[in-house]
Amino acid sequence: MSNQMFKKLGTLIHFIWRRDRIRLFIWIAAITATTLGTASSFSGLYVNENERQLLAETMINPAMIAMVGPSTGLDNYTFGAMLAHQMLLFTAITVAIMNILFITRHTRADEEEGNIEMIRSLPTGRLSNLTAVLTVALISNALIMVIIGAGLPLLQIDSIDWNGSILYGAVLGATGFFFAAITTLFAQLSDNAKGTIGFSFTLLIVSYLIRAIGDVSNDTLSAFSPLGIILDTHVFVLNDWWPLAILGMLTVLIALCAVYLHAIRDLGAGFFPTKPGRVHASRWLQSPSGLAIRLQRTGIIAWAIGMYVLGASYGSVLGDLDTFFVDNEVMQDFLAPIPGVSLTDQFISLLLTIMAMIGTIPVLLSLLKLKGEESKHRLESMLALPISRYQLLGSYFMIAMLLSIFMNLLAVLGLWSVGNTVLDNGLSLMTLIKSAIVYLPAIWVMVGVAIVLLGTTPKQTGFIWLYLTYSFIVVYMGDLFQFPTWMKKASPFGYVPQMPVEDMRVTPVLSLFVIAIIMMIAGFLFYRKRDLQG
Image (tube, rainbow, N blue to C red; front, top):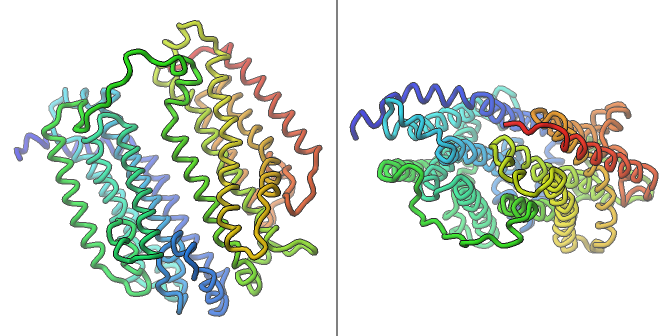
């Protein structure tokens, strides 16, 4: 290809890096801190080989193999084997998500918003922007590989050596760049950002499912999944590098195909034909609620599947709790025994708390979608119609409220459906539902805070995510780190009775409900009076 096709490539690399340097820093720092922190915590949680082998026994069942991968290294469950077995797959998925979002943002999303057209109007090459995006993605994944590969052995933990650590980092980097390349390809095939993200996440989910089925029933099937390929490296056990060579060749071929398609297609077009819509929208779609649901349909479906899978994955470990906790002093401190209460009930109450807080994420995302529509100047045309501010905010509010119930129930259903198969006495679905419903007022308080922010300072809505993160830390890990009581009580989740371990307490639940109603009303009033922002 002519050098003119890559004109100003270096300038665009610098420009894209500047645009996303904070996002990428947060992603890389979070992935690195989680990996190193988990590796370090293992050495404190499992102080001797006996405890590690007890944990290994809980992993020898089809549900756990489907969830975390094949059971290589369980006969000698070293810290390295434990880290790779429990963390590598999910960390690789996180890196894949980072790359999918990054590539979509700088390719198809920028194209939709007219940013690529503006760049093309300057003296830049036709392939410069796409190549720059791929280059920054490659640099970001290389940083993850180097930082984690060099950071793990510096922890000086037995069995976490340099060879396995470098391979661990390389697996994460290779997985990330593979999904960067595949997302770039989908950006050429689809003509919009939603399609690009939808195809990419569908491939990621299908890859996980194929690997799960293959690891349980047929190893050959796992070889058709990129996630199955990376687990064939058997990091810290066999340390095989050849799967990465296969994945690397596939990545290069996909990236070259994407670049070629980008070179021959028209700006704004995609190779997949656009499905023709109706000439006239349905009455449902013409309503604010119908439009809001249509805009969020893909995200709602994805989160619904995710919440059910989350509950099911937690349910799969319920059958081995006694074996796991009986001789582990640290885990007993984390979940101190309560006289007259079974360990299973204690663990379920903890799981319901976790699932409730995770289930709050799609609820807030749905509500804050309104802020995204406002920032893209799409609300002016809607409010020019006979639609009030109350109707507009109310449509997103009702979706969020329904999701708070729906997501919680799906997680409970997943927990019950799988947990019922691994426990001898089974689980009561009604007991689980009652224990989960008490978290709804706490979730609604978070919704109330978000509405107040929308109605007063929409640019500060990010505060709600900090508040939710704070709630997760102090409620989930408060007993382990012995946080003072007032820190837990600063979160609405700190007032929820821990059913089925505790009895129902009406006063705190009713108080949360009243606080949520007051904040919601205040938020609606504020939203009606403030000016729209772009």
